[in-house]
Amino acid sequence: MIPKNIAYYRIAFIAFVLILFGNFIGCLNKDQQQINELLELGIKNAEKGNFNEGLQHFNKVLEIDPENYLAYYNRGLAYKNINEYKNAIADLNYCIKLDPSDSWPYFQIGGVWCDQGDLEKGISFYSKAIEVDPKHIEPYGTRGIIKSMLGRIDSALDDLNTAIEIDPKHPMLYIVRAQIIELKGDCQAAIEDYEKAMSFDPEKFNTKGDIAWILAACPDRNIRDGEKALKIALEFPDSDHKHDTFRTMAAAYADIGDFENALSYQEKAVQELKNMEYENELSRLYYEDKCKKCIEQLESYKKNTPWYLKKF
Image 1: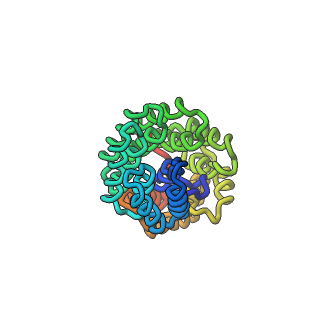
Image 2 (image 1 turned 135 degrees about the vertical axis):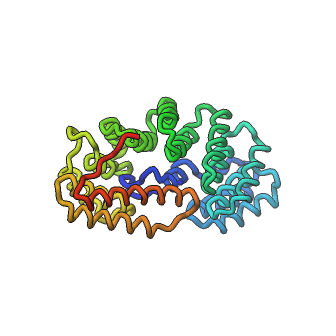
Image 3 (image 1 turned 90 degrees about the horizontal axis):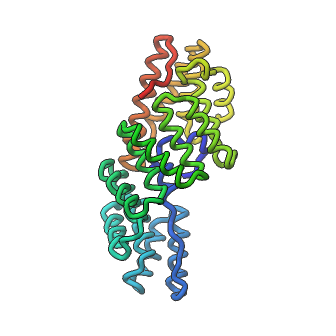
């Protein structure tokens, strides 16, 4: 599926989804001080990315209490993050055995299968999580992302609409919905969702870069504004997602007729994507598809033709 500049935090969920929706559960057992301390240390290490250290603490908890739900759950997440998928699924399934009424293990198993590239199986577990808890927004949001990757745009939007109905104050839901709406070519609605997300916290949820992309690539000339898009994009020279900045600048330059710069920046975008290191199979699928689309954009500029978003 990782908080980088949210303006360039694309449907790449891949990493987007895993940070927003995969938080480690805190310690709830107040009766056993040693278990509390070990769980706390394990969770703190895992949140810092020290997953192997976290595993050691969770293992110690299970030596003391072999049925400790939180240790299994958090150990499952740690295994997931180091791509030990078989162990992750085993631990999360044991959580389901201990408490079948908790939707989180189903949700996390869905992520494990998606990380391995089995998107359909991932969707089935997100659906199961929703069956267990129809008010759990994370499975709706993530299932919507995966559906959009599979081309099921209308169904994906249904999931995001439902999630927003449940929690209308969750900024990331608006960002994900905007990215899916973008695939339908509804530029104005996408911009409105990006602006809505930013209204909650302009710094944390800075979607100006996403809006710039739409301004540069929208097929509706009443919305498209290459010059404005270029001005916004130039505010993000050191973005962690440079390929997004480059493709936005390329689209903006092409819109104003500067194909020399359009080609130059689009070539940089393609190169950035080709050099991408994949965290898992899901990220590979996502970025390879994105690279393919960027190459199509590049070919258009080679013909001195602007490239605009197409309705799915």
